[in-house]
Structure formats: structure tokens, C-alpha cells
Image (cartoon, rainbow, N blue to C red; front, side, top):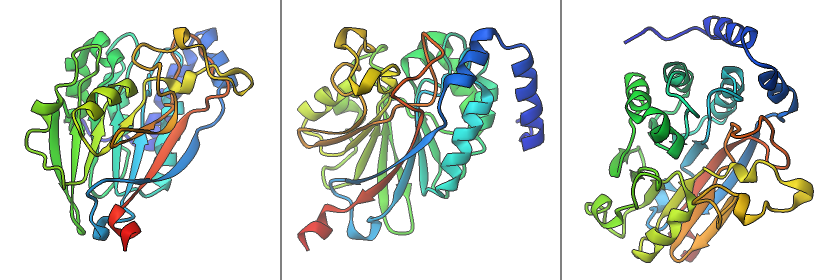
Length: 285
């Protein structure tokens, strides 16, 4: 496995990338606002009181190249690390049109720090660009990619069940098969790139927290108005950004970091999310 890069080495790479960047890359760097940290407290069904306050950081839609630079992503990594989260979840779209930047992206993700690990699921652009290359790059940097499976994350205060689904562009979530070893009383967090999968997951009677991305928060939101539904991403038409409740499912949609289509964000700034998990039992006490 290649040795970790120093920050100085990373910045030298960033300088090289900038030197060969297009005019549209420069436009993106000048127009994109800085990353915002969104802090959210959210109830997770089954979370034991001892795990109340567990902090999960979420990054999504990094889209390294052509419009999002390694410098942009490094800024989001530093913002995430400043939170000192217990765990980090990466909810897909690491690359955009090609898997070529995957090794650099994975190296940037390896700078994330969390005592209970960094985990990933894949987005539609990862599959379209080359999922094997993206998976290989991440796993070589010891970032597990969950593909229609669950993991038990053991902490000092209890066990959190973490699930990851493939993109809806690849297949419809097989909720029953993926969650066959999960019990309803166990706290469950699901990484699912497209938020509209919440309807399918909720219909299966799942009571859990789903974290998603995909929508970029609309990316271009003028005067606070939501984009027209026809212009939103497929499987991102119902749940645009922030918190939702779908049946017994709590849903959070992260606006992401990168851009697609145009090198511009208006009214939908890049986001790092700090999700503080709360136990419903404490509300009843």
C-alpha cells in the first residue's frame, strides 16, 4: 500500500492540478462558497441511553474533478476533523465522469480521523465512472465500502448497526435481504446515496436513520426557492436537503461538496454534517 502523503506533498499536487486546470475550474474556485458545518440532533430508534450523544460526521458528493478540486475536498476533510467525530460516513459520488482521480480522492479521505472508523457507500457517478476502481482505491486506504450489507460498529457504550446500499441507478434496494440479520430493537444507520429510497425502506417497516446525498441541495437555488422538480436529479425529487420523517424512518439529506453540470453553487453551499444521535428512551424518562 502506498505511504500516506504529507500535507505539503498534497498541496504540491494541488498546485500541479491548478496549473493544468481549465478556465471553468478557476471559475468554480472563485464562485463556490466555503464549506458550512451543519449540526443536527436526531433521534435514532433503538439507540440505548448509554450511546446518547454519539456523533456521526457525514460527507457526500465530493465529485473530485472536473469542477471540484483536491483543495476543496481537503478543506472539507479539515472541517470534518475539527468536529472530532466518533465515526464518519461517506455517502457516495466520490468521482464524476471517470475513476481516474479515485486514488487521490482516497488519499484525501484517509486523512479523516474518527476512533470508530470511516465507512463508505457508492453513488450513481461512482458506478458510471468505474465502481471497481473506486472501491479498490478506498479499501486500499482502509475505508470499507458497504454494498447492500451491514456492519456492527462496537463502541465503548454500545453497538451501532451501520448499513450501506448500492445506488438506486444500479438496483432497487433489497431491504429484506440487506437487513436480514438486523433486529428491530437495534440502532440502525443506513447509508443510501439517493434520498428517494426512503419510501421503499419505510414501506418495509424499517425504523432507523437514513443518511443520503445526491441532490446537492439543488445546487442552484435562486432567492431561496426550491428548484423545479423536473430539474432535480433523478431519485432526488422528493427530499432535497435537511431533515425529513418518512414513516418510522428519520432521513437526513446532505448537500454535498462538489458540483456537476456547471461549476457553480447558488443557495446550496457545500456541507459537512455533524449528526448527534439521541436515544428515544431518554425522552420517555
